[in-house]
Image (cartoon, rainbow, N blue to C red):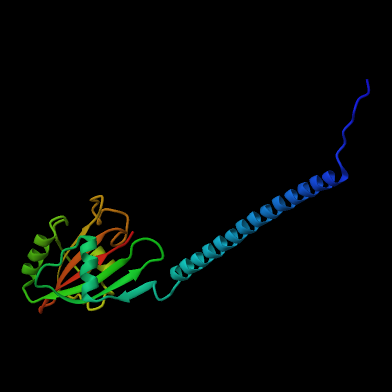
Length: 208
């Protein structure tokens, strides 16, 4: 028996090869397009991250943001509320500064006045801040007074000065018995001062 062999025509073979080549070319083109899109997206993402990082770095090292800045009465009231320090009615705002830190919470130091006797000012402050330890009578040589208030604007202390001070700590540790000189971080000190005229309230809030 004679076997018959069928072979593809040259034209059919050429068409098949052409189709395969076209398919491979299209597939390669698609891969190149996908790769290009992914590369472009990566470049955009890196550029965006760089811009954000540079902005954050500029903000962090901006000398206009860090350091001491005076704040107005509205900002001072908000800061005192945030730190849990009640300024009793009748105390007039004089000044307050904010010490912006690179990291952590900021410091606040302020001064208020009231036209009442020293004992009345102490009573008003104690009643408005029951979570503070009892105000204690102090002298100009007191550790907290010397460390935190001797250089404060408007503060004077002499032989006839009346002082009452208290410091509130988170853990309740007595600041006079700890090993920290002055008001520790994350702590608030209030000081009533009387030099014969108006009574003044000095406030110091340390950040963390």
